Image (cartoon, rainbow, N blue to C red; front, side, top):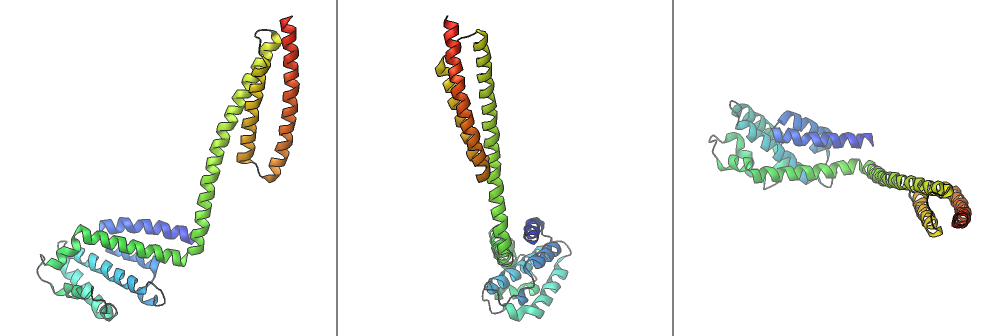
Length: 251
C-alpha cells in the first residue's frame, strides 16, 4: 500500500512539471510510474500508451523549440528519438504528420502552433492522466482497494466520533440540570412535577441509546444494555422520591 501512496504523490508532481514545461523531470517521473513503453506489449492499453508517450515527447520538443536558443537542441533530440524508435510509432496515422517536426524551419508553421494551443495541450493532459490512472490501478489495484476502504472507515469513524462528542455533551448537560432540579426540590426552593422529571429521564435514555448505537461494539453493547436497565430502575426510584418530596412540600 505504501507503494500505491507513493505513486499517488509522484502523480501529483507530474501536474506541476507539466505546467512548468519541465521535460526532464516530467519524463523521469513518468517513466518511473508507467515503465518503458516498449516493455509493455502485453498491456491491453499498449497502443494508447504509445500515442501518449509520443505526444508527450512531441509537446516538450515544440515547447523547447519556442524558447530562445533551444530550437536546435530540441530538434536534434527529437530527430534521434524518431530515428531510434520511429518505426514503433509510424503505424499510427495520427502521429505521422509530426515526424516532420525536426525539419520545419518556419517557427510559425501551423503544426507548431497547433501543438501549443490550449485545446491541444489540455487534450494531451487528459490523455496522459487517463493512461496513468489505468496504469497505477493495473499495478496497484489491490492496494487501491485497501486504501479506499481505510479512507471510508476513517471518515465513518470521524462522523461517529463527532456525533459521540455532541451526544455526550448533551447528556452531561441534561444530567447536570436534572441533579440541580433534584437538589432544589429537596431543599424546597422550587416545586417540580413528576412529569418534569420523567421528561428528563426520557431525554437521558434517548441520548444513552444514541451513544450505545453510535460507538459500542457488540460486546460493549451487551454491558451497556445492562447499564441501561440499571438506569431505568434508578429512574423509577427517582420518580417515587419525587412523588414523596412533592407530597411533603404540599404539606
